[in-house]
Image (cartoon, rainbow, N blue to C red; front, top):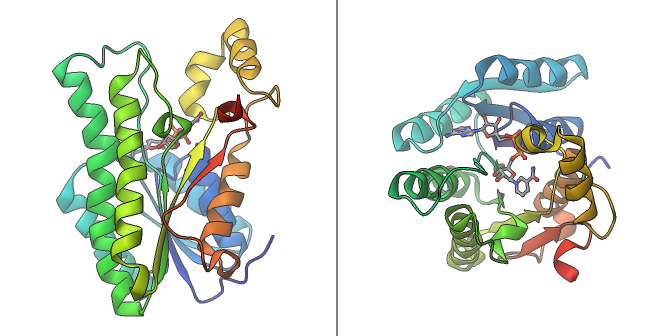
Length: 250
Ligand SMILES: NC(=O)c1ccc[n+]([C@@H]2O[C@H](COP(=O)([O-])OP(=O)(O)OC[C@H]3O[C@@H](n4cnc5c(N)ncnc54)[C@H](O)[C@@H]3O)[C@@H](O)[C@H]2O)c1
């Protein structure tokens, strides 16, 4: 689907692989200039190269989204490079199965990287979008933003927080031309789940968890992100869009 985003500027965090790379490639394929951001510089450069090979326009800026100053510098770099900001996909995140999220350190890390970052990013992005007269933001939450998980209280709380701040920002800017939505992916075949899924029985178990019997492809998340940013979703704001192959329908 080509949404005709020529002349528009999109920013994607966590765009060195997985969902973020698919989203960056999709924005570029629809004509937007894309600021690709991550902390994995080589893979980020690979995303830019893939976009350029396909005839698109992109640049890379390193940014640790849990660092306020780096986030502000990322938005400044985007404005300097492309002259404005229309769309932002705040996607960077961590999920560390096996860590003990009932300890203060593990709890704090998840909340800081997955939730504080969304506030830092949206605050700077919205200021830039207001200059442009509007925009659209999509935050990557998770089905873990809607249901609980006994072994991952911090990941779950951080993603519930992403849904909450998405709704709050949507309400605050509803009359100012900025729509704010979230996607809630189920299990997606990305580097994040690769570590767990490379053991065949775990892959089978993860696939069996989903009524459709398979993991999602990252491109299936990118489709949702682009639709939410497009004029086709012009009356959609504050919505956590579940894209999970039926996992939360059970
Ligand atoms: N894969 C899944 O099954 C799944 C399901 C639900 C939600 N999600 C969410 O989707 C998002 C993308 O994950 P993915 O599955 O594509 O995995 P991924 O590991 O491929 O992507 C996450 C990206 O975020 C980057 N990142 C991590 N910490 C960062 C930081 N502090 N600053 C900047 N970048 C940072 C990583 O380098 C990586 O490129 C995450 O927010 C994740 O929680 C994933």
